[in-house]
Length: 156
Image 1 (tube, rainbow, N blue to C red):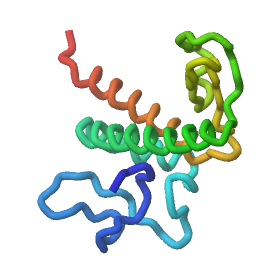
Image 2 (cartoon, one colour):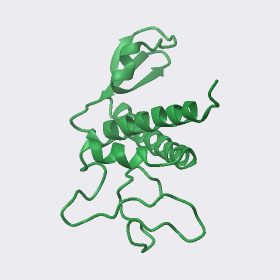
Image 3 (cartoon, helix red, strand yellow):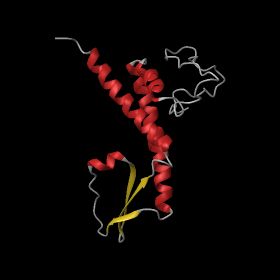
Image 4 (spheres, rainbow, N blue to C red):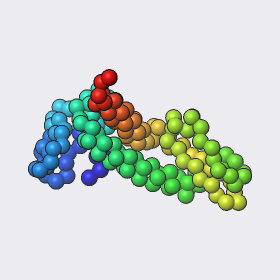
């Protein structure tokens, strides 16, 4: 089960917060009826706190799962929109697109169509809030891994 939502309920019948037997996974906080049902609904401080309590191996596993889920879901959406003709022609030449710093601010895709040019499209934030949140959470996890790795280095 991809872990894009660290507060989601397990699909194997376990209670939330229970790790499968034989593992050393950190238990996620139990969901309550009064609280949010997922990290997508949880306030930012809740999901940040959840990640901050995890070990480097746990964070690394979660980051890999987030990356795979993000990549898959983004590719599906971007390809569907390109296939529907929603890309914007940005160059009539058949040449490689040079990514810029601004490209990191949005979830976008670029497609070269031989003989027609280079097309770009952006997944609108208001339609894909879950993907933008997943991207934000993944970035937070990546920064946490780096910080915890630095903190684990021997002091000089």
